[in-house]
Image (spheres, rainbow, N blue to C red):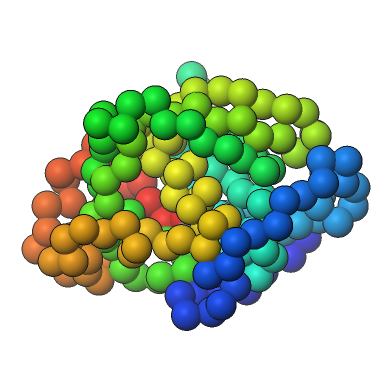
Length: 186
Ligand code: ZN
């Protein structure tokens, strides 16, 4: 396993549309190694999610957390070639998002609160599931990376874009529905 270097905003790999992964290659060594390395990298940098272009691999693969199981453990989903369908464009959820590619920054973004997702998982199985609330936001943030979109592109009010320390001091970080110790960086 290896901790990978995370691309920061300005690197062109974050701005390109990522390539589809052939589902037949998912269980092969190359994709499996990328998944393991991305997981280790995400944990090392305390991310709630990570997309492959953030580790300089412009392919449609992401890891998304934000879900907690019945025993209070975070559940991570590995999603390959994900496709999102928004349930209700008018039902929106706003929060201060962060991103490992913009370290130390926070910005207010509003997104649809409930989605359905189709994707392949790390075993090469086809998934079809619904998400709402914070986990839905995380998956949308990571899917944006696969299109070369960063959360800053979705900030409508740039007075709500700040360094983390100032955001905590001066902005209403409590105005979202996340747990205080959660680290919304992906
Ligand atoms: Zn991100």
